[in-house]
Image (cartoon, rainbow, N blue to C red; front, top):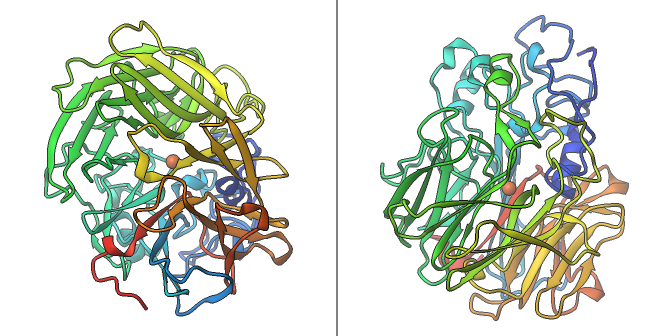
Length: 521
Ligand SMILES: [Fe+2]
């Protein structure tokens, strides 16, 4: 399609690089306005040629192909006792947008889930879309029916009231179910081995009170329970936040709804053994911008950032909103409490890390958007505000991770996606205050996930796993495995894929013993 783009846009390749490099820091700025574009002339599927448009660019800029590859090519010393699945999910536009919405952001693409099933040194690859209400409606109509990101006023009338969720951000295996999340909707339940969609709107047996669900729930290692939340929980643009806890079998036994100072993005949160820590950045839901046909959020640096802290298991009436440094953090690395003293580590910048959302007061500043590890501390009983310090100032990055078995607890090892030309995966040792970087020359790396050497291995004893895109081979993918016992030797093993794999935002590792029906290949 010949089209004319008005203003800077985010190209698909840039976006996938961004999910490689982080959640927005590396993105070239783009406007939030609709783009001038030649009108669609028929119902045929014709993605824009312009790589800056939604789903635009060369075919490698999107995937759309559900794939299965039995026995992938494996190189190196792949550990034969590793038995589990590495799941990933990211936006993959199902259809081109209507012409007036070609300027929508890449995060509005439909969720495409991929799985590397790993056992006995063999690796099988499979991908499937999350077939939720949105996907099925568009499949039947053979065209896009949804307009701008989280703006239902721009939708085709035929889908009014339909769940707009895209299931494209993160996935968890819990109580035997693969749950795929996008923060404006309940999760999609998929079969953890076949990736077939089982429930397009999973509500924990009807006990999920929120209309939304974070992409970053936590698993309490002490109980195996799942703790999650949803913002805009009681309706579009509502200030309500629902927080719940389910037991290891997925039965919700605690649920409270509280009110935030304003409606805004709450992408991640922290759970400690005793507390829930909510975080409200100054990325506000903007009703006027939505009414004008724009995207959901606008960055307003004049608003305070808040930490909202309350006890787990209470009625929510003890919730305190603490103000502190005006930082824009996105992902929790880890956190814990010592009595009433709470510590939370995030990656974050001094300004907007999501340049695809317009800034109200100032142009996007890539320097202020650069991420560092920020340690927030607050005493629930005695503080009036939260404090912040920067850890590992030598490391810039995004997409914090840890050994997921240590959520809620004091922890030693953190991992970070290093941004910049010499990027890689940073390994941060909180005990010694030292850092090192695992990198693969010639490759762009996606977010890594920690894999324990065995399900009961000590903290940090294991591997980092993630996708790498070969820059010399048009982005052809390798699944890369570093052994944390010897990262200096380079990747211990790779799965050499014959093509560029579907992109991702986040990934998740599940041990085979937690996957119903998983048997070693
Ligand atoms: Fe995220």
